[in-house]
Amino acid sequence: MANRLRLDKLLANMGFGTRSEIKRAVKLGKVTVDGNVARESGQIIEPERHVVQYEGESVVYRDVIYMMMNKPSGVISATEDTRDKTVVDLLKPEDSLLKPFPVGRLDKDTVGLLLLTNDGALAHELLSPKKHVDKTYEALVLGKVGESDIEAFAMGVTLDDGYMTMPGKLVIEEHSDRQGEPCSFIRLTIREGKFHQVKRMFEAVGKRVLTLKRISMGPLRLDDALEEGQYRELTPEEVSLLKGNRQS
Image (cartoon, rainbow, N blue to C red):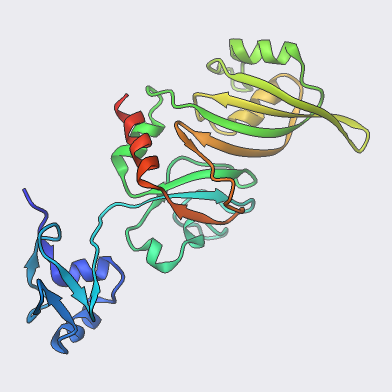
């Protein structure tokens, strides 16, 4: 069945003003449907079939949105908060119209890939514990990460609450010193999303995460061109990859 909705609702959803502003615009003849001046703001249309224009500008209707953000530190993964700035607060007004929400959570001090969408079905699939979607992180760890840690993570480690994690793939990128103390730059892929999981996994082997960045989630990889706090819409190819992952 074709999608049907009021003309003023379509225009409001696409950011062309409030319902009252659109009603005035229609009265002034600024809106056309299939080349004809619209007479009623409550006119029922089918976006896939009708051509709507506002002051000569074509209105492209959509009801879903998918965005990739490089989440900055100090911002929380939520739609609203009474104390802290949220990732939704970083969006431009026009990108907030369809009410996207963050898929999963990154800790306040964790940066990197965050998907924002209003596609609840896709979000559920990506977050479902039954799906075991890979999530890869880069981290700077205080302490020298070694082969014993790689083996422990591959077996699964016991967290502070007694929970045994699923196996994780730990790769050591390099070792360094930080103010005279040994540090390790690592890459870790896990298939769960427990509270503070990466940090707690390293605590379980006697080490501490200093910085943490998520670089991928399922088939979606963080765009290296995005600075912290920046975001962009996903490409059609990226959306297809995510939906393919949902169906696999």
